[in-house]
Image (tube, rainbow, N blue to C red; front, side, top):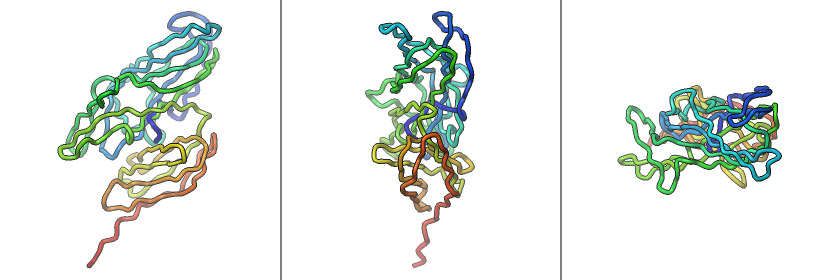
Length: 270
């Protein structure tokens, strides 16, 4: 979908009272960071993620900013990002933060990125000029005693660039967007045949957001309110693309589309 997302499981909603800050005692805000993605048309994509730096302007201290590292310690740091579609998410980390305003977020990558295509593994290099410290714009007020979810949308369709196809040479140009529950609507649906791994692209006047299906053909798009044309690219030379025009996304609502069947390209008998 969009740019990469800090995920949301379905939305983690935890009531958090009186937790301890990494730097001081007293009431804190709980931040949950989850990861989702929009993978390209490969069998699987892995990205090493070490954690997230967050910067908070502490309430009552106009000149006091704290940058706190939230490590990813819940599993293998080589994350199969291509599985994070159709509502699947990964909790990257959570930490009590001082009340104030969250004004900065940086995803901290490791140095291992690769994909599998059929039985072959292809290494991906970070594009020249890109750092493994990826800034993600965000502004979020944090109040003591509340829990907040941030969804990081990692758009692999935009993030993986093919330099040449034979032999396959790929570079990573990480594209991520932070989404806050309550600021978007959803479009869900399913495509057939489910054996395809099509790209689903939502296009508005201002941006495009992409995602892919899971192994049952299901997909989910999280989008700002507005009207979108939805393109279905089969990424398979044997099938025709399809389009739904002028689909309306409403804030806080989920629109379920009828199942879409991509048609095979007619065979020319002549």
